[in-house]
Picture 1 (tube, rainbow, N blue to C red):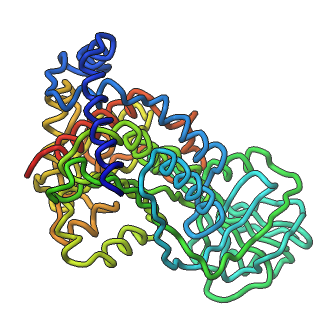
Picture 2: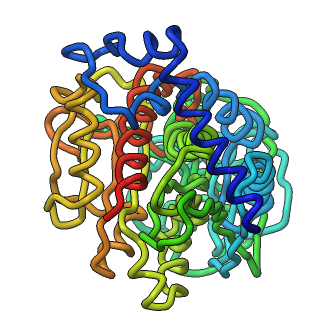
Length: 444
């Protein structure tokens, strides 16, 4: 970026701060008591241009594209690539320096039922085929003649025996469904068998299992697909510090944009992704001593593959520049018991990210809702922690602990309609926005 462009961005940033502070309506919006807050805010100067401008409804428009229009975003497949392209376009329109970082990921085995439900396919079954036939639920292991029919099992005993038995009785496909006896619901899955079979075998999510069971009978069309030689992508958006004559490092705000098979991933983690897009809009012109970097990870659901690849490619001098990583994973659930906003560091210790979010919560009046830090991994803050960097995951969970997730986590019901709270998304935006900007604007 040339000197003229840096100078223009600096003056735009200064004008943006001045406009918010001088505008009575914006100031009132920032200083009024927040929804769900325990007291009126006591903001510092840097909070005003963030809190007055972040809007959950802006983020929701992005989420409609990711969750409703694109739907399940399976790492390395065309669906994830459509999401990547959308993120790149939006961030470039905000004048960030955007790069995509490719990395290879394992093959995927997916299935489609009646053109409406995505399921997992077994790699041991027949792939790349379409079967159309009536289905029959197999109850208590009592196998009827299944010639020309699809065998449908609910909570079949572990192992391959039920599948092999159905095929021996003439089944042209096998559906394995799970209905969980616990608080959580079962997601789609790719069944594992002890040997190859000559028919498609698919794993159906609980909500679709229950619908199929309620239907009782009828014809189904099942298609299976093998997706080989896959490449997933991280999307990285950079904005240099507005005081470029001194390198004070980088502050990162991150999320993963992929989802599990069958799930539109509205909360996990479409919510964190659109939080990043909205904060990228609000923070783009604000003056900072540190660079801002928004990172959207591919293939998190396969084992943090995107963030691990990113960290593995950074030389030591670049790792040392990172002063904090705010990872946002599941930041907007509408699940009633998920009233606690958790600060989740890998070791449970405080660091620059958790401390800044907690301080922002106190200024904004959200402190009674904020819990932690407590120890928890399982998201993209882990690779950064392993390198000794300040990082944490931020998420709405149950009051009893961060393991209390909404029952429809990782299921087809993780939709905007069924699992997104605009109020909680707004709180997340304000907390991360104020905290990240505070860390980025500090001289140290």
